[in-house]
Every structure is written in C-alpha cells, then in structure tokens.
Image (cartoon, rainbow, N blue to C red; front, top):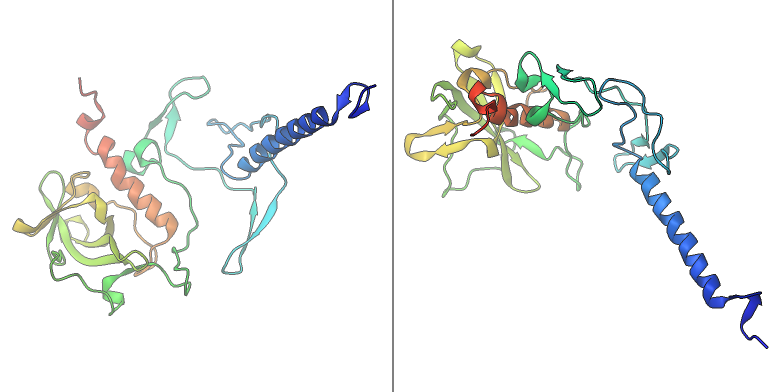
Length: 258
C-alpha cells in the first residue's frame, strides 16, 4: 500500500516542486514586467510604434508618491526624444549620423536624458544640493587647495575663453561640481557652466584648461535658465555637450587611431 500519496502517483514532494516551479515562473514574469515600467522603448528609432513588448508586456500605470508630495505615474506618456541626425541605413539598429552642431545633436557621446527640469534636492531640507559658493556663506575653498576664481579658462587650442567667476558646490558631498565661466567679449560675454571634472587646474600658470573643447565651443555650452540654480536636465545637457567634445570637437578626433 502506497503511503504519502495524494492522487495517483503525485506525492507531497512532487507537489512542492511543481508549486515552486510555478511560483518561480510567475516571479520571473513579474520582475520582467516591472523592468518595463520605465525606460522600455515604445517606438523604434524611425518613430514607428513597437507592438511587441515580449512575453510579460508593459504593466499598468502605478502611482509613486515622492517625498515632496508629487505623484508620478509609471509607465506614462512622454514626448519623443529629439535628436539632430539621420539614419544612415534602412535596417533596425542602423547608426545615426549627427547633423548641424554635433555637440548639441544628442547623439553618441553627446547623448543625454531628459531628466526632471528641477534641481536635485537635499534629503534633510529639500533645498538644492548644488549651489554657487557665492550664494552660501558657509562654503569656502580649503586653504590647502587652489582657488581658481579669477583664473583664465582656455580650450584645447590654448585660446582664452573667459575667466572662472564662481564655483558650484554639492553641499551633500562637499565637492565642487561645476565652475562658472564669464566669457570674453569676443565670445559674447555671457556666463556658462562647465563640469569641474572636465577641466584641468594648472596652478603654476593660474589656468583652467578644458581639453575636451576648443575655446569657441565653450561659448556654446547649453545655458542654465535660472541664475544660481541648475536642474537635473540642465546638468545632463551640459555634461553631454562637454563629453561630446571627446569625439566631436575636431574632425581628427572622429577618425580611427590606426
């Protein structure tokens, strides 16, 4: 006489194994479905809708309650990305060739995400994390470090683009994130913001050099809309422009090394 059998030849061990297998399959489908909640492409590079989203599909919209009281839906309808370029061939995944000012094309190393057009905030008081050092009297440059304010800013061509007029500090990390550059009159005289990690501080010559860009290209760095405040989207746009100079600043940089 069989012992431990429930129905036929299915015993408790087999039932537990089948239950685990079904649970595991359901878990994989759930996790894959959740991974499609944001960032999943709903159209191809030609603007045509993608009808198949895999086995799991796209989940229904869910509400996310942010710390500041804002409610965000995901997934949600979003405007398509705007880039300056054309498809070089008629097959899926064909490369895009930038047109116009390649540093502003939004392609290749100059690509950026349309993040929230709001400043990054501190957790403790919802105040902007990154501010000019001139706007916060509690901030200063350490005595043992070089203070580049007032120094000339040059491009990779060693031509002067302007002078450092301010430093932007991340108050949560106590780090300099950006520098403000007052352009020379020949380049328009406006003020642009450059990532601090993209410049070289040459203390011996009191020079801040931007190897990624030429002096004239520094004048076209995307502007910030509100003086003394930089948003997440503006950060991405500025960093994409400067980073794009690694490939697009001069024609020679886009050529093969060999």
